[in-house]
Image 1 (cartoon, rainbow, N blue to C red):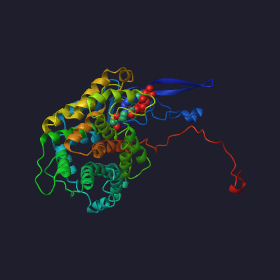
Image 2 (image 1 turned 90 degrees about the horizontal axis):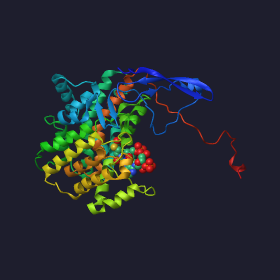
Image 3 (image 1 turned 120 degrees about the horizontal axis):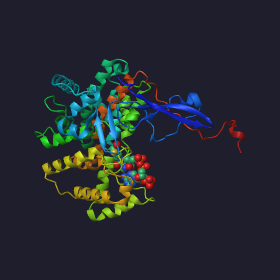
Image 4 (image 1 turned 180 degrees about the horizontal axis):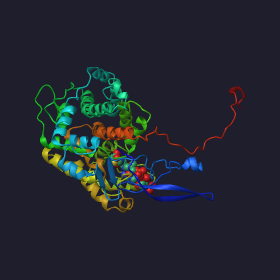
Length: 435
Ligand code: CMC
């Protein structure tokens, strides 16, 4: 149950000689907040913070980030411990339910997810409507939204059982959808899920097996895939999660709200950065060209940015990037492609950027996308699929945050305000009288 903030004092705001008292609230970790809910009612002014740089949009108990220290906790558990000792489905349970499962709870959760992996056969007909060269994120946005047509009862999000079922179905069906998107793009037959495999194994098999031969799943690659999913499972109130919350706050169908999150994730400033980062590493191509790209990233007149560097919240090494780096080495060792030009460029670029004054001053460290693209590329995923894999993994975060919002008794439709700077009121002039 949320609504657990504690009073932590009073802020005084003076506006043109009148002082207003604003409550200060404390959470369990992180900075206090000034509660401005009543400010407009009392003082007739709004606050302005377009990129939400200083504004908490909700109370949440799911994920905590300390960007200065490079800390990421899910329900209190550090991300590196989860990545080392847990598995993706267990992290899903944790995010959704707020606690780690007992063995019995986990067995029944995993069984339920496994049994919901099939898609309605009508869903396959949607794919025929897409061009073969459609961007996979375009197909994902469309097909996740289309799923809402198959589960009309999920619209009743006031029913906890409907919410639970929608969460299970979304987590279960995303890999099947993502794999079909990949297969459609490469022109191979769809592969159906198999219930005797783990979540990650099943996904790899649905992507890379062909009917003509047996597919041997590499435990190292399955582990790396699972880690990738864990590291992308949730990240508090980022753009796509906030989009899901805002879309869902109107009472929209949960699958439609998740489709809105997929759309928001697509952009290169957010989930699309892994695709953009690999493209950039390929464009750099060799270590001797790195200084040229570093100079471009520092040039104010050049819009180029070093993809995979910087983060709105982390002003320290992204804790997910550390685990990704280690996983990248494991995957490349397993595949025997240790000394690829891309990895060489990535390692050298990271070293140079971390020693460069511009990056040090602006606290620009590698983020999760810096190494994830290298892993996915080595596994055989085309660059355009990278953000789809991020969306697959983030689905549990989106549904957990959506459910938390719906369960909050104080929840209202999200409705930001604005400062209007357009024309003041003026009279309409018919077209034949305009000069
Ligand atoms: N390369 C060069 N300069 C940069 C970079 C970069 N990657 N990132 C930020 N800066 C500079 C920026 O030019 C600005 O300089 P100045 O103060 O002189 O104007 C300063 O650093 C602050 O940047 P900002 O754009 O105001 O910071 P932000 O918090 O709005 O943006 C960001 C965060 C992630 C969008 C940005 O760092 C970026 O574009 N990074 C590259 C894209 C990327 O890797 N995104 C993945 C984010 S992690 C995955 C996810 O959460 O989806």
